[in-house]
Length: 315
Image 1 (cartoon, rainbow, N blue to C red):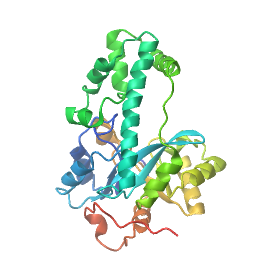
Image 2 (cartoon, helix red, strand yellow):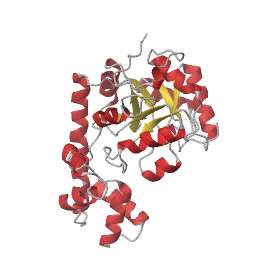
Image 3 (cartoon, helix red, strand yellow):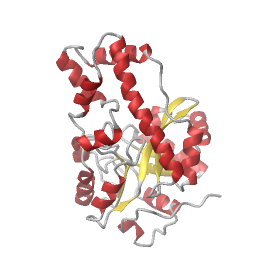
């Protein structure tokens, strides 16, 4: 499938409930309806705070299947890795609730660490200024719910440019690196805890945007992550994935019995206007996922919202 064509699904989406998202929930549904997208997953970073709103909006779009999901960053032997976790139960299990609270504290701490690091190198990016940046693109209820996280890079860069603290993006990135070195580092939850909690809740784990970790579809690296993260699938289609890499990731999935997914990773209105559903993933991949959820491809289940989809069976 050409990347310019629209797929039947988009399984990697963010809203302004994510720290780096700039778009409301319903924008994804409107675009899905316009383009004939039948299934979507809103995968906020490290939480499911938007799920009540997602499911409420979904009631107005009964032809669009919704899979409750999240994108969770974990600590692995090769560093931080993002995992798309699908079919998470609503309401969350006690284990998931505790895990999300760990992430909530972590994201606030990362924001505080960013400010402290900047102050340590002489840039007065204090808590008040961090809130100002967050308020440029996030509604107040998200900030109150999640606290002062680290702001989105693009918004922070614009703020630093206006303050005259940097002259360009390269200088900003250099400043961020210095700030990071000036304070003790924080880490995300360890992969063993996350994978166990997600699987115990009946969730499925997919490696997000794999070129960030296996840019050449390196077999050994994929083997390591498949084992360490207990992968159920790989996001074989994504804006970062070239057609050649897509074929290679897909071949790996076939070899090891993993399912494949695709997503636009949309965060902004521009993403939704131009990239939504146009990741290049094959139509049959949706059936693979629904099969893992215990649903028959010959039923109408994909045409209706199902906030608590049947959990996958594990051997």
